[in-house]
Amino acid sequence: MKKTAIISDIHANYEALKTVLLYCENNNIDKIVNLGDVVGYGPDPQLCLDALNAVTVPVIKIMGNHEHMLLAHTNKRLIDQEKYIADISRFEDGYVCSDSNMFFSHTGIVGSENVGLWGYLNSPDKILECIKTSDYFVSFYGHTHRHRISYYCPQSEIFRDELLPEKHSYSLNKNLRYYVNVGSVGQARANKTEASFAVLIEEEKTFLLEFHHLNYNSFRTYKKMLEKNFDKSQALYLLREKWRRALYGGVINGRLRIHWKGFDR
Image (cartoon, rainbow, N blue to C red; front, side, top):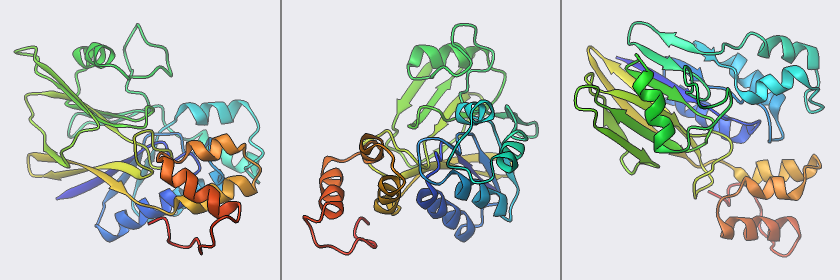
C-alpha cells in the first residue's frame, strides 16, 4: 500500500502547514505532492519553504502562480531572497506519475485553448472542456482553494461534478477520467477556516481518494499577519466564519480576556 498526500495553496501559512505535515508523519504518508503557491498572502513564506525542505519523505514541488510572481518580483518577507529564488526555480511546471497515469499541476488547465495559463477551473463547463481532452486517469489541481471532484465516462459521455463534496472518500473507477481539486492548506475559500488536502491510497490495482479537513491555530496566523503589518482586510480574509472574525478581533483589541493558545480549536 502506498499513501500520497496531495497539498496545495499553502500561501505562507506555517501554522496550517505544520498541522498537515504532522498528520502526514502520524499517518505513514509515503510521499507528498505540493501543487504550488507555497508563498503569497500569508506571513511565513520562509518557514513554509524550509518546512517542506525538511520533510523526510519524498516531496514533489510544483510551480504555482505565486512562485512565478516571486521569480519576477522581490518578496520582502523572505530574508534570503537569492536562496529561495534558487529553491523555487527548481519547482516543476507539472508532474506525471506514469505508473498510474496521473497528472499533477497547479491549475489543471494543461492543453485547454480557452483558458489562460493561470485561469481558474471554477465552473463545470471549463472542467468538462479539460477533462474531455485529457488522456490521464486522474488530474489533480489546486488554485481555486476548494475541494472538488469531477468525473467523466468517455464511452457514455456522462459527466458529474461535485463542488465541496460531502463524502470523505471515493473509490476511483479505472473506466472514468477524474479531475480532483485538493483544496487549500493555508487559505480556505469554503465556509470553515480549515486546512484542506487530499490523500491517495494505492493498493494493488485499487485507488482510494480521501478528502481531509484539519483544524489549526488560525488565531496565531491572524496575529502574525497583524504584527507584520499586513492590511487588516487581508488578515480577516483568512477567517471564513463571522463569529471567528468577531472573536479574534475582540481578543486582539482587548475587549475579551482570553488566553489565545488553543482557544480557536
